[in-house]
Each structure stands twice: as structure tokens, then as C-alpha cells.
Length: 493
Ligand SMILES: Cc1cc2nc3c(=O)[nH]c(=O)nc-3n(C[C@H](O)[C@H](O)[C@H](O)COP(=O)(O)OP(=O)(O)OC[C@H]3O[C@@H](n4cnc5c(N)ncnc54)[C@H](O)[C@@H]3O)c2cc1C
Ligand SMILES: *[C@@H]1O[C@H](CO)[C@@H](O)[C@H](O)[C@H]1NC(C)=O
Ligand SMILES: *[C@@H]1O[C@H](CO)[C@@H](O)[C@H](O)[C@H]1NC(C)=O
Ligand SMILES: *[C@@H]1O[C@H](CO)[C@@H](O)[C@H](O)[C@H]1NC(C)=O
Image (cartoon, rainbow, N blue to C red):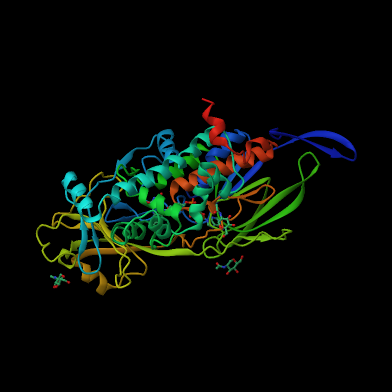
């Protein structure tokens, strides 16, 4: 009999210490950016001989998804990436993918009656307008976000030195102490009011940014608020051909096996290994078509929100039971419409000279959209109108748009297609983050979304879960939850 000898374990068997070898096997549930980057990092840490199976019940990419209409492909889920999202940047480079830059058209803010803010194509005029309307608030806002981003970037240093954290709270605390972690305990509104920002600025600039990025108000936690404001920075990019290409690329690069199936339950069982020694393993039962199968694994990484509506995974017979997380996810509809906008609804003097390509909205319950903006296909840098001047617009809304609503916005349209999402957590500080370690060798990656949901956050959580699983497997406790890492690594180059 041959089997790969990959892991040496020493165990007491009937009073004798014996060493034995076995093939380590890892299951990852969910092939979104979280699961596929976990596969990538786990392969890096555990080496080429471990078996990695990746379960996916839908499409590889998960919430990174595109829709093809009239031969053109558009992002309908996670679409833009920040220039300082270093893991995403690294993946694109390692996988040999190309990027497209955000087109940087002009933005306006609509309050249900008129445009309360309108960008100009003259950079200097925008600055003057911002100062005229809001004093130096936008500059201060920029500095506030910058400071958080600076601290946030420390994670890359910790991870490049292989340090891992056993809870989301410990991870955030390591970045900037109690103040940083404390952002999860307060709303963005409270935080910015305390910092002296005006109601007008909060209503007309900050709230619209929260609506477009998270479909929620300024009552979200301060950290996700900062992530969302950073999403208004310049230099945003996307992956040419679709962001989900990163997921399929990572899957391939990690040389893991994709299993198309829906995981139903996970149970810990005692198994006899190839060596004849009993060992604890997890049984994963999954469904493909109408058939049910099961397999055994040493380590499991759950990379999908543990929420009945989103993943429906049952943990059988764990003692103590694995707690269920009742994080409520925000329902959002993405609609792509190709047509001619009736711009007079936003601005009466607009006809003929309306040059905005994105319209955000204030937190007004009478509005039936969160935002509307021109998009380009996943292969273009700049949106191209069709011959009759029609662009493809992307609308985010809380409900499916009715035909009447679409006709209110458009003079005429070619098509309207939609995709519904349970998009990201509905934030309600104080946030209590789920555990990362659900059981001995069972890890949960998506809990990081309690702090903020974004592609980069899932990639960071994936790197952390891979390091954590590796260090715990090998007993490297000194690499987990180290305090004062920032100070420690400062002196080390
Ligand atoms: C409309 C929208 C806009 C967004 N915009 C941005 C943006 O501009 N920038 C940004 O950074 N982020 C954005 N996000 C957030 C970003 O898309 C997500 O944070 C990220 O994609 C989450 O990745 P994930 O791998 O953690 O989870 P997911 O992508 O949800 O992956 C989980 C996977 O698990 C699978 N699965 C679930 N249950 C099971 C099961 N029982 N068995 C097998 N497989 C299972 C699912 O099918 C899914 O593929 C946006 C999200 C949405 C919805
Ligand atoms: C956040 O609030 C919780 C109670 O909801 C408290 O236990 C915790 O200490 C607070 N954390 C910080 C960093 O303020
Ligand atoms: C969850 O899965 C169980 C079977 O494992 C099924 O009976 C139930 O209907 C599912 N629930 C949802 C919300 O999909
Ligand atoms: C465009 O919208 C305005 C304002 O709602 C409306 O008065 C006008 O009739 C619309 N134009 C057309 C051609 O439908």
C-alpha cells in the first residue's frame, strides 16, 4: 500500500509513544474570494502533499459575479477594489491578470427634489465647491479615513511575518488598540458627530456614500463606515474580464479539487487512519444533484456566511453545540438598464448638458433607488454608449424596481435585468463578531464581515485562517494572538 507521508504525529498508544504519518486533508466550504484565497494560502503553508477540497454549490466567485447582456459582461456584485488592497493586488499580479481603472466620471447627489451636490470636470472647481458648501470638512474627512487606513495596513506586515489571530477582535485590536476596535461599538454617525462634522456634510456626502456601498444609513459601525468612505477615493480598479477571475485563478493555482455540491452537515467522528490508529476527523456530508455523499477531513474552513438563508450548514452533535449566528444580511437588488435617462428628474436645467455619470441619493425614504451610475463592461476602461447614445446604467435598490419606476427614470430603454443579493451584514453597532475557531480544527472565515464586508476583508480573513490552522496544527502557539506586534515588528526589518 502506498500513501503520501506528509504529517508526522506522535501519540501515546497503549502506553507506548509511537510516530505515524498520514495524508492531511482539508475541506473549504465556499468558492468565493474568501474560500479560494484560503485554498491559496493553505497550499502555501501546508505544502504540496495535503489534499484540499473546495465545496461550492453555486458558481465559483460567489458574490463576485457578472451578468452577460447583449454579448457584454457586467459586474453585478463586488465591483471596485481600492488601490491599497494589497492582497487583491498581489493575486492579480501572481495570476497574470490585467486590471481596468475606474472611469472617474462626474458624481452628483440627489435628495428627491434636486441635486444638492454636483461635481464639475474642473478639479479646482470641485475643491472650491466642497469648501464653499462644507467648509474644510471634506479635507478633514479625508484625513480621518487616511489615519484608519494607515493603521489597517499594519495587517499586511503581521501576515507577511506569519502572525495569526484567533478572533476578529484580537486582529482589529492589534491594528490600533482599543480606539480602533471601539469603532465596532459606535455608529459612524456618532463617531463623526463627535469629531465635529456638520449635519449637512453628513447628510449630503457621507450618507449617500454609505447608501451606494452598503445600502444602509450612517448608523452602520464606524469601521465599515471608514472602509466605505475609502471606497470614494480615487484610483479604484477592477479585474479585466471580471473580478471573479481572481477566484477561478486562485482555485487553479492552489491545485485544490473543486467539488460541485451543497454541504449539508458537518460532524466530528473517530476514524481509523491508514496506519490503523484512531483519529478525530470531520465528516462533511454534501449533496450533488439528488445524491448525498460524505468525506472525512482533518481541517475545515467555512468560507460562507453561517446564516440559514445563505448556506444552511448544520453542525451535528458538537458538545458544546456550535452556536448559530443570526447576523441579518442586507437585501439589495442590482439592476442593469440600457437606455436613455430622463435627466430632468434630477435637474430641471439638465436637458442637453447633463454630464453626471453617477447619482447618489440622500437617506430619503421616498426614493426608490440607492444609486444609479453608468457602467462599462468588464473589458473596458471607459463606458461606451450605443449608436443612439444609450448607456448601460447600474442601479442599486432595496426592492425590485417596477416597470413604472424604470419608466420614471428612463425616456426609453432597451433592457432591464436584475440580480438579487443578500449582500452584506446589516450593521447595527455594537457588533459582536462570531468566533473564528468554531471547534478544534474547524475555522470560520466569514465572521470578519461583522467588521466590514469587502473582497479584501475576506482575503485577509482567509490568510489569517490559513496561518491559524497551520500554527495550531503544528503547535506554534507563539505565532497566535501576540500582543504589541506593531512595536515588535517595528525594530525588525
Ligand atoms: C451588490 C454588491 C456589491 C459589492 N460591492 C463591493 C465592492 O465594490 N468592493 C468590495 O470589495 N466588495 C464589495 N462587495 C462585497 C464583496 O462582494 C464580498 O465581501 C465578498 O465577495 C465576499 O466573499 P466571500 O468569499 O467571503 O463570500 P461569498 O462570495 O458569499 O462566497 C461564499 C460561497 O459559498 C457558497 N456556499 C454557501 N453555502 C454553501 C454550502 N452549504 N455548500 C457549498 N457552498 C456553499 C456560495 O454559493 C458562495 O459561492 C459587494 C457585494 C455585493 C453583493
Ligand atoms: C464594546 O462594547 C462591548 C459591550 O457591548 C464591551 O464589552 C467592549 O469592551 C467594548 N469594546 C471596546 C473596545 O470599547
Ligand atoms: C436547510 O436544509 C435542510 C436539510 O438539510 C432543509 O430541510 C431545509 O429546508 C433547508 N433550509 C433552507 C432555508 O434552505
Ligand atoms: C422626464 O421627467 C420629468 C420630471 O419627472 C417629466 O416632467 C417629463 O415628462 C419626463 N419626460 C418624458 C419625455 O417622459
